[in-house]
Length: 67
Image: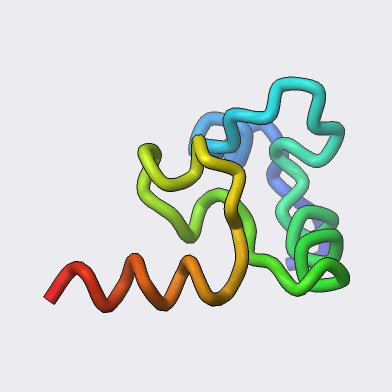
């Protein structure tokens, strides 16, 4: 697949940061967050995502808490 399905992706995106220019453009979102040693919003449950702590550390804590 060579094109991003932005309309479909936007409907699935749980990013609560409203001025985000990458909503629906998963490729750009992944690159952006990777450069910042973070993960995108879609890796987190809504309650955690809304804290804007998208660090790998927070992801690991979240996943470990699910056991």
